[in-house]
Length: 89
Image 1 (cartoon, rainbow, N blue to C red):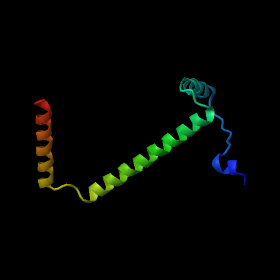
Image 2 (image 1 turned 180 degrees about the horizontal axis):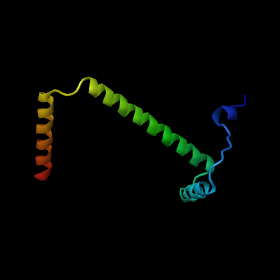
Image 3 (image 1 turned 90 degrees about the vertical axis):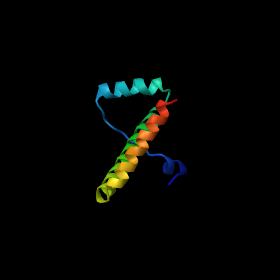
Image 4 (image 1 turned 90 degrees about the horizontal axis):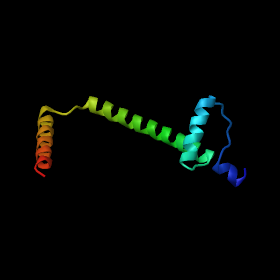
């Protein structure tokens, strides 16, 4: 395998013409190559999925061990103190 083949993969995709035109306008506005634009879209979507999975894991863990009434009161008091501190500025 050539060194350049290890770094990049060429693909051919079919998308609706209106979506392509919209993407081309945005790509040109951002002064990106088509490859840079598509790579950015891939990267953003993957980052969104990773974040969504992280939030789902957090929610599941929190559901297994929710805060106690004492912790809830502490959080409420802390939030009120912070709100007052910023209101006084």
